Length: 147
Length: 147
DNA sequence: ACAGATGATAGGCATCTGCTTACGATCGGC
DNA sequence: GCCGATCGTAAGCAGATGCCTATCATCTGT
Picture (cartoon, rainbow over the protein chains, first blue to last red):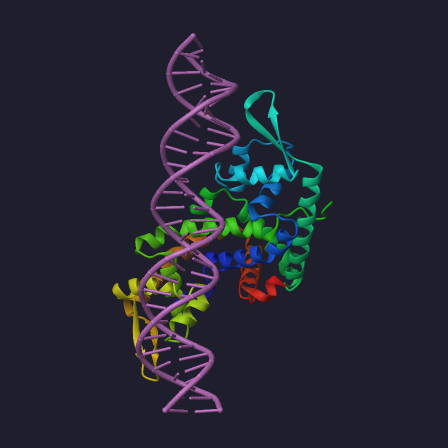
């Protein structure tokens, strides 16, 4: 009865996302990172040099109380720094160390290379539109997706 | 240093998939279905009228031992049927009942309608390429994604 | 100065998920 | 007719996740 036989978006997106995550794992393992650890490195890599832990957690979609252990691990390994904020002694300002930036870029490059190999299977004509659209949808606030 | 500033595919795909799943929940709840239940109805809706439980589990990416409870629930509600296979008395042949087909289509329509509203935000020029590519990637065997 | 809000942290809980084992019934190849 | 493999089922385990509470330190508005 449907005019259009495609599967539900989520039915395609979720398993594909799982598969992509699984494909990333070797690259993460090679650097001793968990998915959340990598997520934190990505979250700290953006423009602003420092963030508070709550803001970071909100950004990467993690629970405020659950990234603490992740941050502990990353700090122990010297990938991030927790500095006291002179302006507000409650918060810890987070930033990547040079080593953190290095690891982040190494993992990122490995993942990106694998992705490019996958995207090579997609007709060049569709690729840009696909990435553009995916990026647009992914950056929509969730309320707009929930409708 | 990257020539291209887009986020990792998985970093876009996974949260987007989660958001889409969350958006589907009201439609599922309205019919008393879980995600797995709906998954089963979708898996049974395809061309072949009957399937074995293991084959179904494999298809929808579920654990063989974990969909049993789901199937029990769906059967109790009269949405699916488990019929003995005369040719192989070990297996249960699964099929949708008329009611199952009805519920499946109702949920599907609700979900599809929400999705179309979301896709309406995407430039028409990109939409077809996006869906085509997503479908192509989603139907790749996982080994090809793992590389 | 005081009350209420916010940040980091610890701890626990209920749930889900993937995985493994075990068991009885049955099929298939030899 | 026997042995190994397959199917459905039950049960359990380890890990991850979201959520909630409590605590202490600190900030902010009044």
